[in-house]
Length: 253
Image 1 (tube, one colour):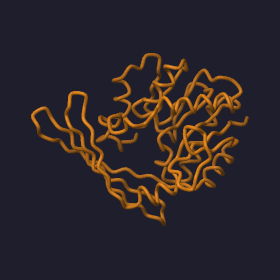
Image 2 (tube, helix red, strand yellow; image 1 turned 180 degrees about the horizontal axis):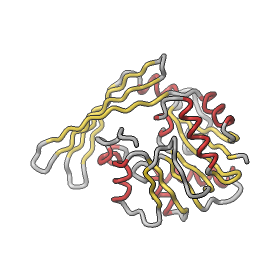
Image 3 (spheres, rainbow, N blue to C red; image 1 turned 120 degrees about the vertical axis):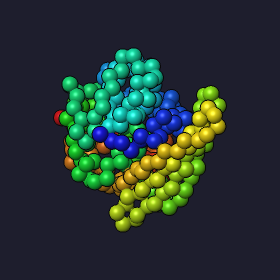
Image 4 (cartoon, rainbow, N blue to C red; image 1 turned 30 degrees about the vertical axis):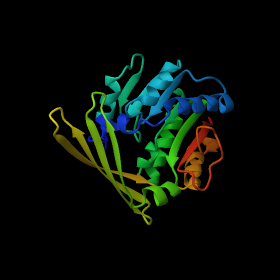
C-alpha cells in the first residue's frame, strides 16, 4: 500500500478547495457523449483519494468503484457521504475487480506517481483488462512544462483553515532531476490545535515526468486507441505552457 499521503490526507481537500470538480465532471460527461458508445453504468475511479470525484460522479447517477492505495486517503473518503460507492484499498499497479467497467477515471496526476515506465504499462494493462469493449479511459498527467518551470526547485506555502477556524499551513519544497525526470516533494504540514499550538507532520512524495509520446505509445501497447488530448476542462488544444494534459483513450477488444 501507499503511505505517501499519511501527513496530508486530513487537510488535502482544504488545501485543494480551488479544484472545480463539477466542471471536471462536466468535461468527463462531454467525453462520454463525444467518444463513448453508450453512457457507462459502472465507473472505476482509480487512485480516487478522498473520493471527491467519486462522489461527484455518483451524484450524477453512475455506479462508482473507488480504488486507492492509501488507507489514510480512503479513510477520508469513508468519512464523507459514500452511500452506494464501493471503495477498495488496492495499489493501482495490481488492483483486482469483480468484473469489467464501462469507463475508468484517474484524476489529479495520480499516474505521475508511477516512477517506472513498466509500472505505467502494468497499470494501463490492468485498466484495459477490466474495461468493457470501447470503454473510455480518461486521465490527466502533469506536463514536462510543469515539472521544469512550475515544480522545478521551487518552494511554496499553502494556507487555509478548518471549518471551525483552525489554521492549516503546508510548506512544500521541490527538487527536480532533469536526468532521471523524477521530482521529489518534501511536505511539512502544520495544523493548529484548539489551544493554539501547532502540530507538524512531514512526508516525501515523488512524481515522474513522462512525455506525451511515451504516454501515447504505452496506451497503444496496452490495447487502447487514443481519441483525444486536451489542455483544460473546455477540451481545448494543449498549449506549450499547458500544465496538465487530459487524455481520452478507448479500449479496443
